Image (cartoon, rainbow, N blue to C red; front, side, top):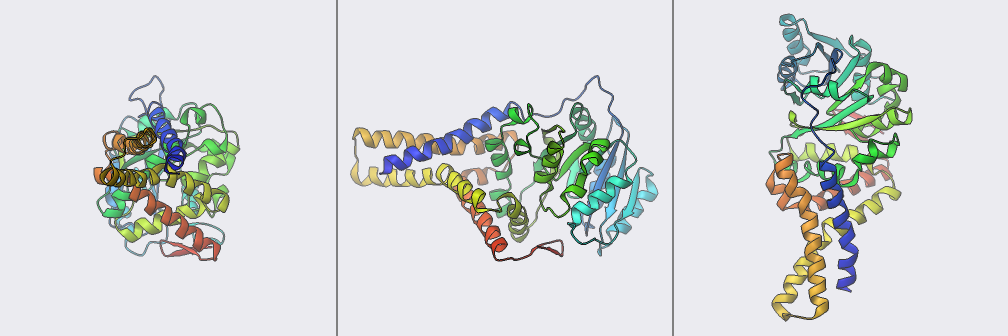
Length: 380
Protein backbone atom coordinates (compact mmCIF):
# COMPACT_ATOMS: atom_id res chain seq x y z
CA UNK A 1 0.00 0.00 0.00
CA UNK A 2 2.83 2.41 0.86
CA UNK A 3 4.39 1.78 -2.55
CA UNK A 4 1.10 2.57 -4.30
CA UNK A 5 0.81 5.85 -2.38
CA UNK A 6 4.40 6.74 -3.28
CA UNK A 7 3.71 6.02 -6.95
CA UNK A 8 0.66 8.31 -6.88
CA UNK A 9 2.70 11.08 -5.25
CA UNK A 10 5.54 10.85 -7.76
CA UNK A 11 3.96 12.60 -10.80
CA UNK A 12 2.26 15.15 -8.54
CA UNK A 13 5.72 16.20 -7.31
CA UNK A 14 7.79 15.75 -10.45
CA UNK A 15 5.55 17.45 -13.03
CA UNK A 16 5.38 20.86 -11.24
CA UNK A 17 9.15 20.72 -10.67
CA UNK A 18 9.80 20.09 -14.36
CA UNK A 19 7.33 22.82 -15.34
CA UNK A 20 8.99 25.26 -12.91
CA UNK A 21 12.47 24.59 -14.30
CA UNK A 22 11.23 24.85 -17.89
CA UNK A 23 9.45 28.13 -17.14
CA UNK A 24 12.63 29.68 -15.76
CA UNK A 25 13.87 29.77 -19.37
CA UNK A 26 10.84 31.86 -20.36
CA UNK A 27 10.22 33.97 -17.26
CA UNK A 28 13.02 36.50 -17.79
CA UNK A 29 13.77 40.15 -17.13
CA UNK A 30 12.77 42.52 -19.95
CA UNK A 31 15.70 43.58 -22.09
CA UNK A 32 17.65 46.68 -21.13
CA UNK A 33 17.83 48.26 -24.58
CA UNK A 34 15.95 47.77 -27.81
CA UNK A 35 15.57 49.63 -31.09
CA UNK A 36 12.05 50.54 -30.02
CA UNK A 37 11.36 54.04 -28.74
CA UNK A 38 8.64 53.44 -26.15
CA UNK A 39 5.67 55.76 -25.85
CA UNK A 40 5.06 57.89 -22.76
CA UNK A 41 3.70 56.14 -19.67
CA UNK A 42 1.20 57.15 -17.02
CA UNK A 43 2.23 55.55 -13.71
CA UNK A 44 -1.09 55.11 -11.92
CA UNK A 45 -1.20 54.49 -8.16
CA UNK A 46 -4.49 53.75 -6.35
CA UNK A 47 -4.13 54.80 -2.71
CA UNK A 48 -6.43 54.24 0.26
CA UNK A 49 -4.89 55.13 3.62
CA UNK A 50 -1.32 54.77 2.38
CA UNK A 51 0.24 57.64 4.35
CA UNK A 52 2.98 55.40 5.74
CA UNK A 53 4.47 54.62 2.35
CA UNK A 54 3.00 56.74 -0.42
CA UNK A 55 5.87 59.26 -0.40
CA UNK A 56 8.45 56.51 -0.91
CA UNK A 57 6.34 55.00 -3.71
CA UNK A 58 6.13 58.33 -5.53
CA UNK A 59 9.81 59.16 -5.07
CA UNK A 60 10.76 55.76 -6.47
CA UNK A 61 8.48 56.34 -9.47
CA UNK A 62 9.96 59.80 -10.04
CA UNK A 63 13.42 58.24 -10.35
CA UNK A 64 12.26 56.55 -13.57
CA UNK A 65 14.67 57.16 -16.44
CA UNK A 66 14.84 56.80 -20.25
CA UNK A 67 11.14 57.43 -20.84
CA UNK A 68 8.58 60.22 -20.63
CA UNK A 69 6.10 59.70 -17.80
CA UNK A 70 3.65 61.16 -15.32
CA UNK A 71 2.68 59.90 -11.85
CA UNK A 72 -1.02 60.02 -10.98
CA UNK A 73 -2.25 59.06 -7.51
CA UNK A 74 -5.94 58.33 -6.98
CA UNK A 75 -6.91 59.11 -3.40
CA UNK A 76 -9.62 56.56 -2.64
CA UNK A 77 -11.33 57.98 0.43
CA UNK A 78 -8.22 58.09 2.61
CA UNK A 79 -8.60 59.35 6.17
CA UNK A 80 -4.92 59.29 7.21
CA UNK A 81 -3.57 62.27 5.30
CA UNK A 82 -2.49 60.41 2.17
CA UNK A 83 -3.85 63.22 0.00
CA UNK A 84 -1.85 65.92 1.81
CA UNK A 85 1.39 63.99 1.35
CA UNK A 86 0.75 63.62 -2.38
CA UNK A 87 -0.16 67.29 -2.72
CA UNK A 88 3.09 68.33 -1.06
CA UNK A 89 5.07 66.22 -3.52
CA UNK A 90 3.02 67.51 -6.46
CA UNK A 91 3.84 71.10 -5.54
CA UNK A 92 7.54 70.34 -5.99
CA UNK A 93 7.28 68.19 -9.11
CA UNK A 94 4.79 68.84 -11.89
CA UNK A 95 5.01 65.24 -13.05
CA UNK A 96 2.97 64.27 -9.97
CA UNK A 97 -0.78 64.70 -9.94
CA UNK A 98 -3.39 63.96 -7.26
CA UNK A 99 -6.91 62.91 -8.19
CA UNK A 100 -9.76 62.09 -5.83
CA UNK A 101 -11.97 59.10 -6.55
CA UNK A 102 -15.73 59.67 -6.47
CA UNK A 103 -17.79 57.77 -3.91
CA UNK A 104 -17.68 54.03 -4.52
CA UNK A 105 -20.69 53.05 -6.66
CA UNK A 106 -22.65 49.88 -5.85
CA UNK A 107 -21.29 46.77 -7.54
CA UNK A 108 -17.66 47.92 -7.55
CA UNK A 109 -14.56 46.81 -5.68
CA UNK A 110 -12.62 49.78 -4.31
CA UNK A 111 -9.33 49.11 -6.07
CA UNK A 112 -10.92 48.33 -9.43
CA UNK A 113 -12.97 51.53 -9.25
CA UNK A 114 -9.89 53.59 -8.36
CA UNK A 115 -7.94 52.04 -11.24
CA UNK A 116 -10.78 52.69 -13.68
CA UNK A 117 -10.88 56.33 -12.58
CA UNK A 118 -7.10 56.52 -12.92
CA UNK A 119 -7.22 55.23 -16.48
CA UNK A 120 -9.73 57.92 -17.41
CA UNK A 121 -7.51 60.69 -16.05
CA UNK A 122 -4.27 59.40 -17.63
CA UNK A 123 -2.73 61.53 -20.37
CA UNK A 124 -0.32 59.03 -21.94
CA UNK A 125 -0.86 56.08 -24.33
CA UNK A 126 0.61 53.49 -21.93
CA UNK A 127 -1.01 52.85 -18.56
CA UNK A 128 0.97 51.31 -15.71
CA UNK A 129 -1.02 50.38 -12.61
CA UNK A 130 1.28 50.12 -9.60
CA UNK A 131 0.26 49.36 -6.02
CA UNK A 132 1.26 51.90 -3.39
CA UNK A 133 3.49 49.37 -1.63
CA UNK A 134 5.63 48.77 -4.73
CA UNK A 135 9.02 50.44 -5.04
CA UNK A 136 10.12 50.79 -8.66
CA UNK A 137 13.76 50.76 -9.75
CA UNK A 138 14.76 53.53 -12.14
CA UNK A 139 14.77 51.41 -15.32
CA UNK A 140 11.68 49.31 -14.56
CA UNK A 141 9.13 51.39 -16.46
CA UNK A 142 11.23 51.89 -19.60
CA UNK A 143 12.17 48.22 -19.83
CA UNK A 144 8.61 47.05 -19.33
CA UNK A 145 7.38 49.57 -21.90
CA UNK A 146 9.80 48.00 -24.38
CA UNK A 147 8.55 44.55 -23.35
CA UNK A 148 5.00 45.70 -24.11
CA UNK A 149 5.84 45.79 -27.84
CA UNK A 150 3.58 43.27 -29.57
CA UNK A 151 1.48 42.75 -26.43
CA UNK A 152 -1.57 44.46 -24.99
CA UNK A 153 -0.87 43.78 -21.31
CA UNK A 154 2.30 42.81 -19.48
CA UNK A 155 2.94 42.15 -15.83
CA UNK A 156 5.44 40.60 -13.48
CA UNK A 157 6.15 39.77 -9.87
CA UNK A 158 8.37 42.25 -8.00
CA UNK A 159 10.74 40.95 -5.36
CA UNK A 160 8.54 40.11 -2.39
CA UNK A 161 9.94 41.54 0.85
CA UNK A 162 9.05 39.09 3.63
CA UNK A 163 9.95 39.70 7.27
CA UNK A 164 7.39 37.97 9.50
CA UNK A 165 6.69 34.23 9.81
CA UNK A 166 3.59 33.98 7.61
CA UNK A 167 5.13 36.31 5.04
CA UNK A 168 8.15 34.11 4.35
CA UNK A 169 6.16 30.91 4.76
CA UNK A 170 3.43 31.77 2.27
CA UNK A 171 4.27 34.62 -0.11
CA UNK A 172 7.10 32.79 -1.96
CA UNK A 173 4.49 30.19 -2.91
CA UNK A 174 3.17 32.74 -5.44
CA UNK A 175 6.17 32.02 -7.67
CA UNK A 176 5.91 28.29 -7.01
CA UNK A 177 2.26 28.11 -8.04
CA UNK A 178 2.66 30.36 -11.08
CA UNK A 179 5.80 28.79 -12.52
CA UNK A 180 4.94 25.26 -11.42
CA UNK A 181 1.49 25.13 -12.98
CA UNK A 182 1.30 27.79 -15.74
CA UNK A 183 2.79 26.76 -19.11
CA UNK A 184 4.37 30.08 -20.12
CA UNK A 185 5.39 28.80 -23.55
CA UNK A 186 1.74 28.01 -24.30
CA UNK A 187 0.66 31.35 -22.86
CA UNK A 188 2.79 33.07 -25.51
CA UNK A 189 1.38 31.10 -28.43
CA UNK A 190 -2.31 31.43 -27.62
CA UNK A 191 -4.84 33.91 -26.28
CA UNK A 192 -6.68 31.30 -24.21
CA UNK A 193 -7.87 32.99 -20.99
CA UNK A 194 -7.00 29.90 -18.94
CA UNK A 195 -3.29 30.23 -19.74
CA UNK A 196 -2.97 33.79 -18.48
CA UNK A 197 -1.65 35.32 -15.28
CA UNK A 198 -0.60 38.70 -13.95
CA UNK A 199 0.44 40.30 -10.69
CA UNK A 200 -1.91 43.01 -9.48
CA UNK A 201 1.05 44.85 -7.95
CA UNK A 202 2.28 45.85 -11.42
CA UNK A 203 0.22 45.79 -14.62
CA UNK A 204 1.12 47.74 -17.77
CA UNK A 205 -1.21 48.02 -20.74
CA UNK A 206 -1.89 50.00 -23.88
CA UNK A 207 -4.64 52.54 -23.21
CA UNK A 208 -6.45 51.83 -26.50
CA UNK A 209 -6.62 48.09 -25.84
CA UNK A 210 -7.54 48.69 -22.21
CA UNK A 211 -10.62 50.73 -23.08
CA UNK A 212 -11.53 48.44 -25.99
CA UNK A 213 -11.94 45.43 -23.69
CA UNK A 214 -13.41 47.44 -20.82
CA UNK A 215 -10.41 47.47 -18.49
CA UNK A 216 -11.24 47.47 -14.81
CA UNK A 217 -14.90 48.21 -15.58
CA UNK A 218 -15.07 44.65 -16.92
CA UNK A 219 -13.96 43.19 -13.58
CA UNK A 220 -15.83 45.58 -11.29
CA UNK A 221 -16.30 43.43 -8.21
CA UNK A 222 -13.27 41.18 -8.39
CA UNK A 223 -10.74 41.06 -5.55
CA UNK A 224 -8.19 39.42 -7.84
CA UNK A 225 -7.26 41.73 -10.71
CA UNK A 226 -4.09 39.72 -11.32
CA UNK A 227 -6.29 36.80 -12.34
CA UNK A 228 -9.26 38.52 -13.94
CA UNK A 229 -7.74 41.39 -15.93
CA UNK A 230 -5.46 39.33 -18.22
CA UNK A 231 -8.35 36.91 -18.79
CA UNK A 232 -10.54 39.83 -19.81
CA UNK A 233 -7.90 40.97 -22.31
CA UNK A 234 -7.48 37.47 -23.74
CA UNK A 235 -11.22 36.97 -24.05
CA UNK A 236 -11.17 40.06 -26.28
CA UNK A 237 -8.39 38.52 -28.38
CA UNK A 238 -5.47 40.50 -26.95
CA UNK A 239 -2.08 39.06 -26.00
CA UNK A 240 -0.67 39.22 -22.48
CA UNK A 241 2.73 38.26 -21.09
CA UNK A 242 4.85 38.00 -17.94
CA UNK A 243 8.36 39.20 -17.12
CA UNK A 244 10.57 38.74 -14.07
CA UNK A 245 10.63 41.97 -12.03
CA UNK A 246 12.75 40.65 -9.16
CA UNK A 247 15.57 43.09 -9.92
CA UNK A 248 13.35 45.90 -11.18
CA UNK A 249 10.85 46.41 -8.35
CA UNK A 250 10.15 45.32 -4.79
CA UNK A 251 7.02 45.07 -2.68
CA UNK A 252 6.20 44.55 0.99
CA UNK A 253 2.66 43.37 0.35
CA UNK A 254 1.70 42.56 3.94
CA UNK A 255 3.28 43.39 7.29
CA UNK A 256 1.52 41.11 9.78
CA UNK A 257 0.12 37.60 10.12
CA UNK A 258 -3.48 38.83 9.99
CA UNK A 259 -2.80 40.81 6.81
CA UNK A 260 -1.19 37.79 5.15
CA UNK A 261 -4.05 35.48 6.11
CA UNK A 262 -6.86 37.87 5.15
CA UNK A 263 -5.08 39.08 2.02
CA UNK A 264 -4.56 35.59 0.64
CA UNK A 265 -8.06 34.55 1.73
CA UNK A 266 -9.72 37.36 -0.24
CA UNK A 267 -7.94 36.21 -3.41
CA UNK A 268 -8.56 32.53 -2.67
CA UNK A 269 -12.30 33.13 -2.68
CA UNK A 270 -12.10 33.78 -6.42
CA UNK A 271 -9.08 31.71 -7.35
CA UNK A 272 -10.49 28.43 -6.03
CA UNK A 273 -14.04 29.39 -5.25
CA UNK A 274 -15.83 26.19 -6.31
CA UNK A 275 -15.64 22.48 -5.38
CA UNK A 276 -14.61 21.62 -8.95
CA UNK A 277 -11.42 23.66 -8.42
CA UNK A 278 -10.56 23.44 -4.74
CA UNK A 279 -10.88 19.66 -4.38
CA UNK A 280 -8.52 18.64 -7.24
CA UNK A 281 -6.10 21.45 -6.37
CA UNK A 282 -5.99 20.31 -2.76
CA UNK A 283 -5.38 16.73 -3.85
CA UNK A 284 -2.63 17.74 -6.28
CA UNK A 285 -0.77 19.93 -3.78
CA UNK A 286 -1.16 17.52 -0.87
CA UNK A 287 -0.04 14.49 -2.88
CA UNK A 288 2.90 16.26 -4.48
CA UNK A 289 4.11 18.68 -1.81
CA UNK A 290 3.09 17.24 1.58
CA UNK A 291 2.57 13.48 1.47
CA UNK A 292 6.09 12.69 0.15
CA UNK A 293 7.53 14.18 3.34
CA UNK A 294 5.16 12.06 5.43
CA UNK A 295 6.29 9.05 3.41
CA UNK A 296 9.89 10.01 4.13
CA UNK A 297 9.17 10.09 7.85
CA UNK A 298 7.58 6.65 7.61
CA UNK A 299 10.57 5.44 5.63
CA UNK A 300 13.03 6.62 8.26
CA UNK A 301 10.94 5.05 11.02
CA UNK A 302 10.82 1.72 9.19
CA UNK A 303 14.54 1.79 8.54
CA UNK A 304 15.32 2.45 12.19
CA UNK A 305 13.01 -0.26 13.48
CA UNK A 306 13.17 -2.84 10.73
CA UNK A 307 16.27 -2.29 8.60
CA UNK A 308 14.46 -3.86 5.65
CA UNK A 309 16.56 -4.59 2.57
CA UNK A 310 13.84 -6.00 0.31
CA UNK A 311 13.51 -4.93 -3.31
CA UNK A 312 10.12 -3.33 -2.68
CA UNK A 313 11.44 -1.33 0.24
CA UNK A 314 14.30 0.02 -1.86
CA UNK A 315 11.88 0.88 -4.67
CA UNK A 316 9.60 2.66 -2.21
CA UNK A 317 12.61 4.52 -0.80
CA UNK A 318 13.81 5.62 -4.23
CA UNK A 319 10.40 6.86 -5.35
CA UNK A 320 9.89 8.73 -2.07
CA UNK A 321 13.28 10.43 -2.27
CA UNK A 322 12.67 11.49 -5.88
CA UNK A 323 9.34 13.00 -4.83
CA UNK A 324 10.88 14.86 -1.88
CA UNK A 325 13.71 16.26 -4.00
CA UNK A 326 11.23 17.28 -6.70
CA UNK A 327 9.05 19.08 -4.16
CA UNK A 328 12.04 20.92 -2.70
CA UNK A 329 13.80 21.79 -5.96
CA UNK A 330 11.62 24.74 -7.08
CA UNK A 331 11.83 26.30 -3.64
CA UNK A 332 15.62 25.95 -3.54
CA UNK A 333 15.87 27.54 -6.99
CA UNK A 334 13.61 30.34 -5.78
CA UNK A 335 16.09 31.27 -3.05
CA UNK A 336 18.71 32.29 -5.60
CA UNK A 337 16.59 33.31 -8.60
CA UNK A 338 13.97 35.37 -6.74
CA UNK A 339 15.85 36.08 -3.49
CA UNK A 340 13.28 34.25 -1.39
CA UNK A 341 13.74 33.48 2.31
CA UNK A 342 15.47 30.13 2.86
CA UNK A 343 13.38 29.37 5.95
CA UNK A 344 10.18 29.18 3.95
CA UNK A 345 11.88 26.89 1.44
CA UNK A 346 13.04 24.48 4.15
CA UNK A 347 9.54 24.40 5.66
CA UNK A 348 7.88 24.07 2.25
CA UNK A 349 5.40 21.25 3.12
CA UNK A 350 4.16 23.20 6.15
CA UNK A 351 3.69 26.27 3.95
CA UNK A 352 1.55 24.22 1.58
CA UNK A 353 -0.58 22.99 4.50
CA UNK A 354 -1.07 26.60 5.64
CA UNK A 355 -1.96 27.67 2.10
CA UNK A 356 -4.53 24.90 1.78
CA UNK A 357 -5.94 25.90 5.15
CA UNK A 358 -6.46 29.44 3.87
CA UNK A 359 -8.09 28.13 0.68
CA UNK A 360 -10.58 26.03 2.63
CA UNK A 361 -11.19 28.82 5.14
CA UNK A 362 -12.06 31.18 2.29
CA UNK A 363 -14.16 28.52 0.56
CA UNK A 364 -16.10 27.83 3.76
CA UNK A 365 -16.81 31.52 4.28
CA UNK A 366 -18.06 31.79 0.72
CA UNK A 367 -20.37 28.78 1.13
CA UNK A 368 -22.04 30.21 4.24
CA UNK A 369 -22.36 33.65 2.67
CA UNK A 370 -19.81 35.63 4.69
CA UNK A 371 -18.71 38.93 3.23
CA UNK A 372 -15.10 39.54 2.26
CA UNK A 373 -13.62 42.59 3.96
CA UNK A 374 -10.58 44.57 2.85
CA UNK A 375 -9.47 48.13 3.58
CA UNK A 376 -12.54 48.68 5.78
CA UNK A 377 -14.90 47.75 2.97
CA UNK A 378 -17.09 44.65 2.84
CA UNK A 379 -17.95 42.76 -0.34
CA UNK A 380 -20.37 39.89 -0.88
